[in-house]
Amino acid sequence: MSSAPQSASPGDTAPPIDLDAYDFALPKERIAQRPLADRDASRLLCLDRATGAVEHRTIRDLPQLLDARDLLVLNTTRVLSAKLVGRRSSGGAAEALLLGREPTDATADVARCRALVRISGRVRPGIEFELGARADDTPLRAVIEAVHEQGQVTLAFDPGVDPYANGRPPLPPYIERSETDDDALDRERYQTVFARVPGAVAAPTAGLHLSRDLLARIDAAGVRRAEVVLHVGLGTFRPLSDEDLRAGRLHAEHYELPEATARAIGETRERGGRVVAVGTTTTRVLETRAREDGRVTPGAGETRLFLRPGDPFRVVDALLTNFHLPRSSLLLLVAAFAGREPVLAAYREAVEREYRFFSYGDAMWLA
Image 1 (cartoon, rainbow, N blue to C red):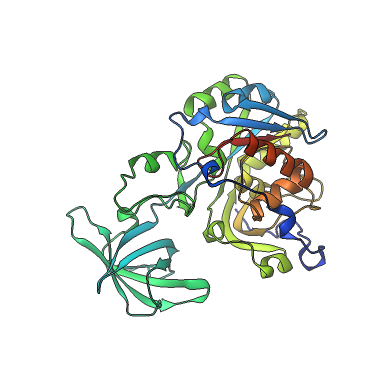
Image 2: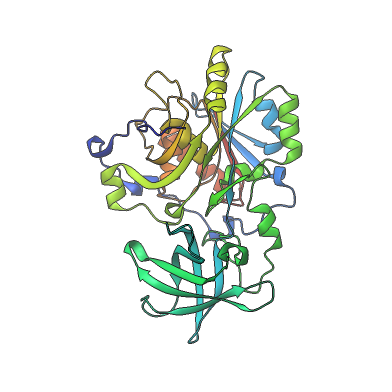
């Protein structure tokens, strides 16, 4: 698949965004710390884009909200076990989030990864770590070889070691876990049931609600499915910066949109159906590959698309998404899709009705 320029984003020509206008009060107890026992047990706040009307349902009602002519598009990225917990060799707790392998000679036997490290004191080359443990319980050793911009480092590991084989699920900072917590539940639930292409350092969380049973019911209703890939990256953990807002671009994330998906979208248009994106990550891939006339071209590459209020949506007709952090690019995308005031009013109602927020929380349907 070829790469092509992404959909136009307003960039420097866009009016300035006041992030204070995308803030909302959220009590800490509304942030979901654990997944529900069943994936498809979450509540679903439905927002009508045309009227601003709100309805309260559950994820299990999703087949009733879809039409047999619709196309459900999923992000099949797989989350890597990218979090390593341990200690500095000289003492003191340490934690590393692996962001991906460095491009190295294919014959090299030493794994080098870009990472963020959390330690007390200054991050500098030469600091050594013991992170996690191998299958034989010997420590996994690593050393900082280089320090880069935005706090990133290059970690070099012992020869012949796969650092991801020793990692934990890279849960976002607002989900609290101790070093001794059993991560078996997170390994299962911080991953969609349709994940198959390794590469993400955060989950496409809207997809976490879809159980195999629910997908079977959607299939039985005649709704077709298609796939894209977007490997969720470092930017998920970063607040929006003034530079992001000025440039009108986000951090780069790798994506793939297959020929079969582009064809399925064209067929959906022909039969009068809707393109339904499961998650903001799926939305960004679809809109990255969109042409002015709404057609979608297959391709792969990196996207920096930043969808903000005032930007057009050329492909996506309906959106399933989670509740997002205040002042975030994800909240701006949802506000661009359904309007700032209706979205923030729906968020306030969700807080009042004690919906669960963020990655392990409840969901929204916007159509």
